[in-house]
Amino acid sequence: MARRIEGILDEIRGSRLEEELRGLVTRPGHRIELEAGAFLIARYGYPGLEVESYVRRLDGMAAEVRDLIGPRVSGEEAIKVLSRYLFIDQGFRGNTKNYYEVENSYLNRVIDRRTGIPISLSILYLLVGRRLGLPLYGIGMPGHFLVKFDSERYKVFVDCFNAGALLTEKDCARFLMQAGYGFEEKYLQKSSTPAILTRSLKNLIAVYNKLNESVKASRFSRFIEILDGAKKGECGTGA
Image (cartoon, rainbow, N blue to C red):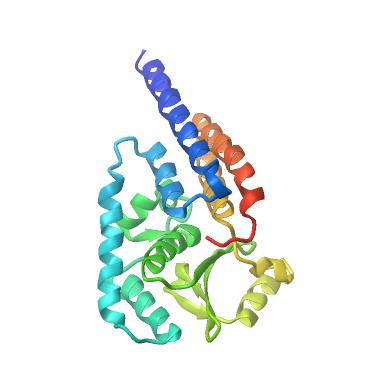
């Protein structure tokens, strides 16, 4: 009986979130915000999640970095300060010991535990950096996810899983070649917000399938179907 009730509640909660996601992707211009999408996903895994408390924490991080950066600073210095703050001062790190742990993919748990996988740490980096007005974009390479700082004067890739290591395009190409993917320019194109959320959902689906939690995996598959329509309208617009 308890399992049946849990299933009914899950169906109600999941259906409501699907409707909310449809509302996000059908707004004028088909623009879905990365932050709203990431926390919507987290709310399925954590029904009682108080999103506003995490928004305030992100706001607080950005405010602290803003104080460290100052009013006039180069893009290169801004990235170094942001990376130092997140990966040294705050201790965010890649979860190398339990890479496939489901909590690595939920933004709230990444913030709580200060550990995650490449895409979840990159989402965190993007959300803090965007609050500072930095030109940051997600880069969904095969086998790895990066953040790119892209201004007229300075361009660099940030590896958030590896303590914010700064990479050039040649470094990225070398990684892709060594990993057996080969190199194509499209691998370094900016990922749209729906593409970033879809990739995050696919990670969760893979983990839940391994845990034999087919209900959650199926729900996230439906989330992806909803996002597919948004990807067509937002392709190449960044994160």
